[in-house]
Image (cartoon, rainbow, N blue to C red; front, side, top):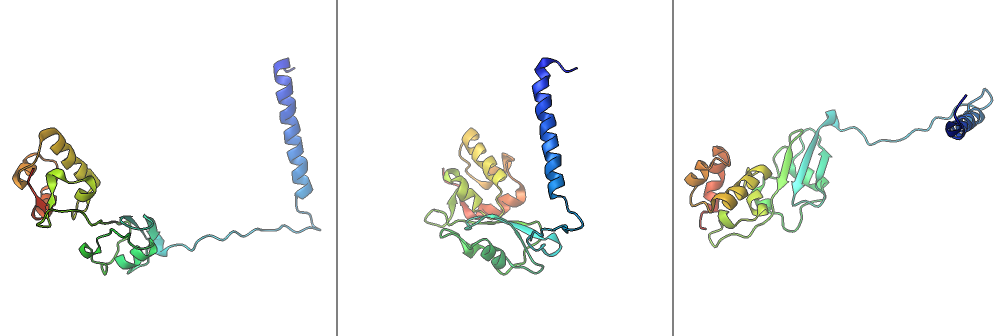
Length: 179
């Protein structure tokens, strides 16, 4: 016998189960009433599941299906196009997009009168606009400048071991080392 504390919850559970069974029996298909199947449409599958991610200065950043042979211009159009501050001059819009690739569309950034980005005063977005720069590398540079002070040369940044040598070789001609 159930204790008095459990009688009401048990009775309610029994009533709920019974009413569910009655409801199922009332709606169960019978020989006179055929079973109805509801078809739900789903988006067509991507060719072989190919997708790419687009981020940065785009209208709708995200992951999108890409057809074999798709170009960056196609992916950009799928994402609603570039924002007004996108710097498309630094991209090859005719290049092919690989499955699983992430593409960052850079923003136009303020620069020095020479067109270089002042590394020691650059914003996170400005650092990310440099070719090959990742979020992790930009944060490492910012943290190095914050903790060890301004960087006066590529050699000094290299000695701090905050970014890879190939990335440093890529960005060094594009930055101004002034404090």
